[in-house]
Image (cartoon, rainbow, N blue to C red):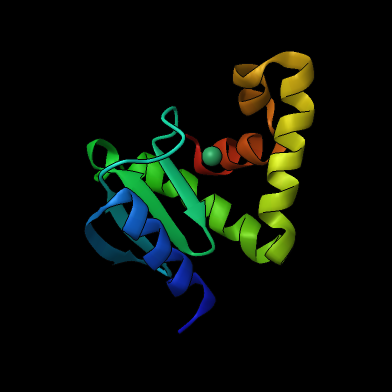
Length: 114
Ligand SMILES: [Zn+2]
């Protein structure tokens, strides 16, 4: 079993899988719940976990696909760097601003247009 397949199965175990389909090299999986609650989607490796309400949002999926490129470029350390940058900024600026100004989010918005 590939590493991300294992992560996907564990994720779905906790969050409840409703449907999934391929989208280019990505796999989109609808989950019943998604932690944290403020997020509409989360990307892990090449797998996009998305809340049902956003499942048909091409805009959101194209944004998440930029995060897939970021994972590919930065490899294993990507989530650690992502969360470290988030925490560092959130301590100073608050969570909302930290998310908005996060360099990976800025890049994803710039490249996807969303
Ligand atoms: Zn994002």
